[in-house]
Length: 135
Image (cartoon, rainbow, N blue to C red; front, side):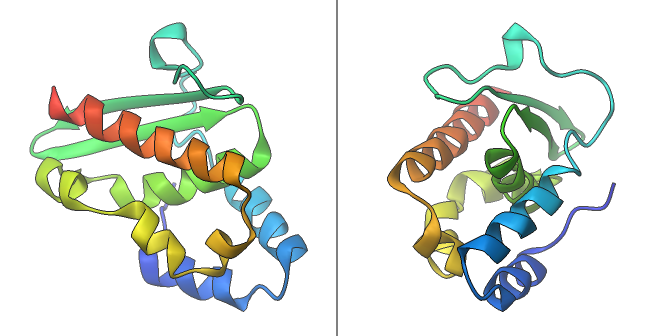
């Protein structure tokens, strides 16, 4: 499974002409999760407090953070793929310093997603950062 970088994500999202094209792009990305076929849909990986079910498994390998995730909805799963693409295989310090919401605001995606999904994204980012602080 090959993740994509920020520039490619930006380019592809900004090529979308409307919300329907962005949804189709997110659905396309959603099909790439989970990254490994091992079932991560376990209680210990679930993010509590989200309307959707979201599972995130985080581990440290050498000096890098490895993230895998899944969701029960396609749009959130596509957004999760973007988050994982940006954070996966990065050093802990870089992830903790990053500002995903600021990055997202530079794309058309932020313009189209509703408040509920923005809150969900913030919960995912917060969950990831809190988990990696302790590993």
